[in-house]
Length: 490
Image 1 (cartoon, rainbow, N blue to C red):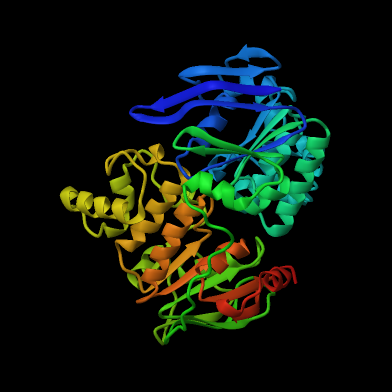
Image 2 (tube, rainbow, N blue to C red):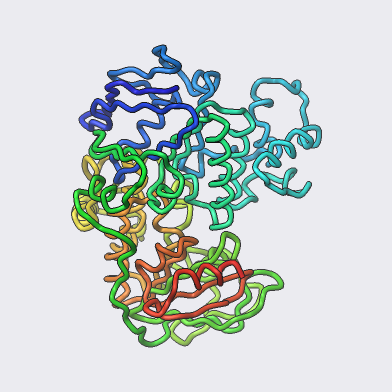
């Protein structure tokens, strides 16, 4: 149904795609994988009409097409759910308005359509994905929903348009295990209905479970195409040039003295109180389903919210950070869940974003900032044209390295990382994990992730949250993936 013939695209001196040819027939799931910066997002944007190729052709039903805008692609039956949370929904509009955004934009419901009048159609769109939303949730501003819920809103909206080609870019990056399973069932159903699906993911387990074929991009080129039966080792070798199978667990370390103690802490209204220690020299992996209380726990320590009950002790002294500035002054640093909305300043350079945490006065030495940023680029292997390159010119994984690296330049007593591997490829994930573990030698580090494999790959100790309470606290060396997954769903 869809084909690319020798498609190329450059951004200045950076060649994002180098003559890529691919075909995607009806009723097939084609997974596209590759390291950050391999060209996956550029490929998606060309198919979705957000970018035009410099060279080559896009062919639809045997005829060459050139989408001038995303609307052109949508009219041709191409629907895209993008990776970044900022692209899923429109802040300031209700959840109902976001579910029926196309009708609003086209004027189909007239100029005076209120959220209440849109409720029946919005519920219909939500039910197409099995979403159960209360009336108040539908009428509230969509920003009141969590990241995972906003992603599901965007997916439900796309499915309501009966796409012929559905492009899913890191679709499970913000979803819990249960939500991901629901998405997989939808993908399989759409395949049976003849929909062509382009599925971009760094998670090879789900690629193996869903894909009919896997296309590997590397440095903008089509490196290989694999058909079933798929072998993860060969896919990783094509992606990175090295063989790496399974989850590589780090050598476990025992933590030292407690840096942070939560005593009688309650993170959700009505949840069970618990005690928890964050220890020096240890990476604590915090896992649980979306909504289990991970972000709430980190937010309380970073001054974003107050605990409903309990107290927090830092090095034996009770603290009550009033805001993030107060927490940073205490040596508590946070890499937030949504880097685009919460961690990066668009329009600023890599240098300005990387050294943001070092700014403590009105004037700083740009020369010193450039030196620090150059060292960080080398240390984390950040793929960029240089320290002064716009942050938007970096791939998602390299942007995440900048966000994590910012706190490597400003030593922390406590480092909190909320979903730090979202949208990050295997190689970048290992780079970040290695730096995090090195930093933990002098600090307490928490890595929060809904992905059990990510936690197993970086943690010394693992805590599972469910419904706001601690249901499992185990040394990583003794942790079993299946047991952790069951505990998450308790």
